[in-house]
Image 1 (cartoon, rainbow, N blue to C red):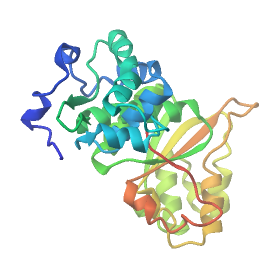
Image 2: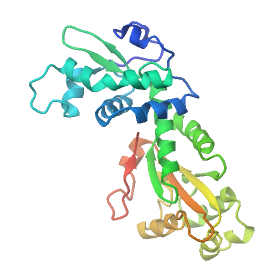
Image 3: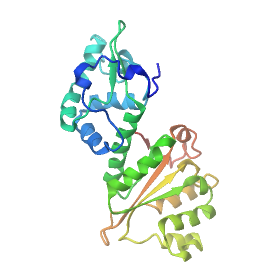
Image 4: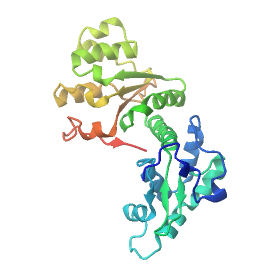
Length: 276
């Protein structure tokens, strides 16, 4: 069952006093990252599963089965899940926030769900931290369109210094269209737009620290050959460099179903698309 944000069941749950602390809200990204890092792998796996289905009530049996929490299938599913989620109490004490999920007891077992807004806070926090930790690389992220702007804003805040620049991939379907867009977004000299070689030459500033976010990334160079795409994106990231200390991170962002239909998905240049 899907629960809209204003559904009364969000307040009519079985969590008791354990859910009395403040709810998660925009601006809690730092706390969300602390909370996430305080969990173990199994509890993170449960939350990751719920975040990917935010708003939906998920039966405890589905969680236990899909995540392999009871390989022999001999234990009571509610007890298994309660044991796995035991770490949330410690994480809540560290952050002063309630668990990100709600749960409802029932005759056929318990159901769990995470509000859409809560999942978005955690997704922004964890993915932005992942980008920050992997400076100088390329990452591909699956984000729903309503969350892209807030993610970029939080990413900019996370870096606190290096430039975070956004390029619209749907405006860059060919190299000829892409170069002026990137020149403008990266504030490169005017002559960087004269040719592909000029563009590549002006990217070789080893002291520059920047993060390039391409939204609608599945449209980037979609009318070009895959090797052209690979050469182009390879020029956009690298470092940290020994001489100059700079780095350039490339973040490709699009919605989940767009990545599933991505033209270059089945090529040797296919990339691992990440969610939380």
